[in-house]
Image: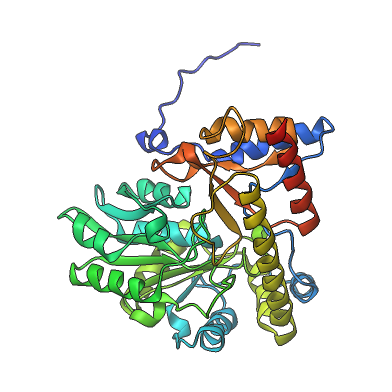
Length: 397
């Protein structure tokens, strides 16, 4: 047999500009320990321990039996777009034309579509630091330049209108926000969000707002960015509030004038979202199913109300109470451990010595990442309680 050797294929330069997703790397390490017999409590990945309610599962099974598994419109099936629009009216008091809704293969596909549609080469996009790591990589993949704006506790780890006004240049194209946010679980104040949108609009830019955790808000009913004008682009998902992470289904709401452009891009880049997931998602909006989601939201709030004071009792600082999602962004510099203030080393120690997974701040930006860890409380309360006791033992050793 002749062995043929090939030169190493040259990768596109954008690959080097995209950093590893450290939470997934840590998850792989935790999985290896599990296979070796270790009992690991995972508070790293932001995935609800709840799964799709029975009505959603049955809707998927029914769709499979009926054979409705072929290509759909690139924008998604009309009944689902109408159901999403009705949900905006019922839950958030916002009227949305179903024609503006683009169903996608998860929120990731939605964000990628938005960036491909709106970002040109070398365009700058402002976003807070810390933020969800993939957001900056979506901009990079579109050959734009993410501009991470240090955003501390005083501004709830969020971008402000003052930031927009101060940092906007001739190269700035828009802003990419999330409310509530991953990794901080904090929302943008409604008045501040309005000021941001006004500031961006005055400069001819775009505003993209990731609202995938909006259903998991724990204070007053939040205001959707859609209420601020039909020029705002919002992103949502069936993964978090609707507990369908692996189904890969999300959506965008886009300005009326951009529907044709988004449809063209969706046709070429994705063909269509999963037909099976779309028909299953129709059951998410049935009254009985929505009641289940409401009960689960209260359970997430109960977990938050346990874990925040528990973390503080361990020496962590939580400078801003998370008001949504299922994350806590905590300052680890005050814990009693040799790796205090070095989140990468500390999370390694927590994994290997206590069997507890948290995520180091380096995933989420460059603003004080060594000082912070992210915890996901999307796991059962007894597991959270056990994890706290394990960490208490580690920090008192």
